[in-house]
Amino acid sequence: MQTRTSGEYRITGGQLQHSKRPPTPHGLNDNHNHDLKNIFKSAATEARTSTDAFGVFYQELLTKGMKPALAR
Image (cartoon, one colour):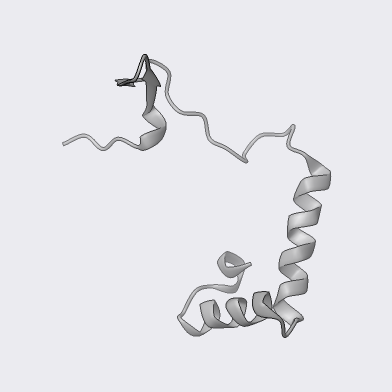
């Protein structure tokens, strides 16, 4: 049995084809956008302590058993 992901396919001429190159991991490179990453991390940190919709959503994830690091 072989497992494949959607990243291994591409659409060419309206047809789905298996890509010859393996998918590259996203978000694991050294040249990421530092400013954008900081914005997202700051927003996640702020959501932990807020009482708005994001804070409520974060608390619901924790209540369901999700680890805090993943919920952020």
